[in-house]
Amino acid sequence: MNEYPEIIPVFPLSGVIYFPKTNLPLNIFEERYLNLVNDAYKKNKFMGMVQLKKIDNSVYQVGCLGKINDYQKNEDGRILINLTGVIRFEILDEIKNEKLYREFRVSYNKFKKDLSSSLTKITSDNLIDKAKIFFRRSGLLLNWKEFEKLDHIQKINTLAMISPVTNEEKQKLVEAVTLEEKIKTLEDIINFYLHEVNFENRTIQ
Image (cartoon, rainbow, N blue to C red):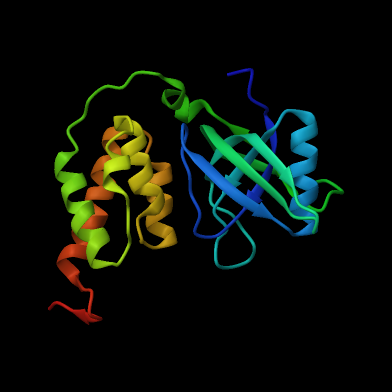
């Protein structure tokens, strides 16, 4: 675990989650985050993403460390990057600094399994079948043929990342420590929507 920094720059962004072994493209244009990306790219290419809460500028305690693997600077000053998820982290405390962006001291201990290359098969066919119904009813398109080319963990993480659910529900998925827990949480969330919501804006009583 020593190869990952104890103090990391963090990009707080509401409604966006990602996981180890997934990719997150970002279009950076605010000065503070341009500074963050440039500093991270020059140093070790590591930066964290965490969800921003709706009140008081606070952040959730769990996010994901990513490594910048693509960096393109546009003529208008914007930077386009791609982050590859490495390992989730738990925030310990915020570091006071003179920079425009925020830095946090983090721990990776809770999420050591993120680094495992094991692809232990856990049955999720039922989840994927329900996700197809959920996505279709909510108008979300996904190329299922391409989806089938992903490995098992990538499939679950992809569904968790793009499911049209609330920020709080997304955070539950980020904080699910094991794959089994993530599958169970996602299935529970999807079941709620399929049973409680009529997608023509009527609630089933």
